[in-house]
Image (cartoon, rainbow, N blue to C red; front, side, top):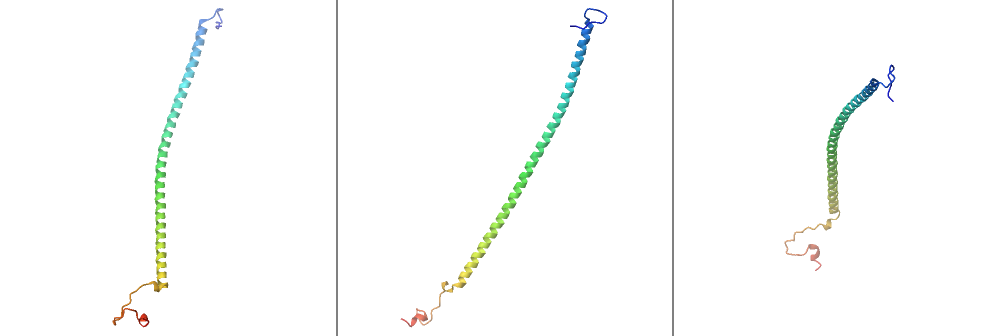
Length: 132
């Protein structure tokens, strides 16, 4: 039902036009608000993209740093393992040498030496010369 003009009984075309203009202005205002919100969201999205890029760069730098630190730690551990292995081998060598020297001193009969033969022509040692 169309609105009626106060001074005339039949429906007023100006009232319908005014209502259409008012609705058009409301729609235009809603569109302006939607556009403002869209622009605001676009600004937020750009900020988020910028933050994401910064975080990506920071994570790449962090990854490089952790890899460098990990390599250094491995080198240090490897160096200490080699030092420990060298000291262990040195200790084993010293113990082996000490054992060999101790065995050499405790059993002199195992050491073979050549005795000079007397000039009398005897080929037997003096202890066995009289028993034959």
